[in-house]
Length: 66
Image 1 (cartoon, rainbow, N blue to C red):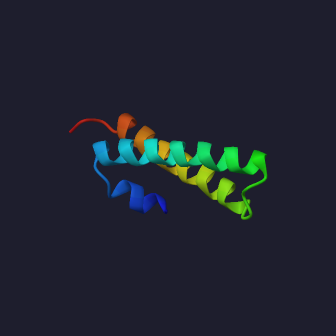
Image 2: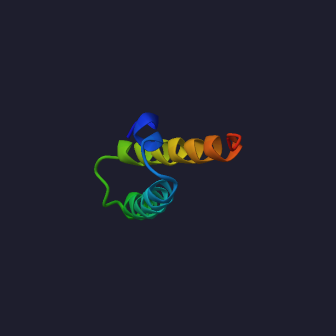
Image 3: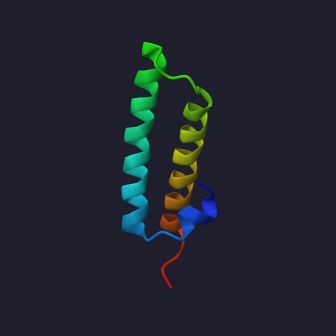
């Protein structure tokens, strides 16, 4: 997911999406360490998606209320 996709979400939708991403990331890490994950690049993609969502949240908090 691109940053623009995250920016298109409302604050509540973004928070829910971030929660889902973190939950999925945990599952991927568990699969990776138990040897069940065949596509290891998904871990990196998930981590970057989480970072993008957190960046958008941070931008919204820093934006002055007008």
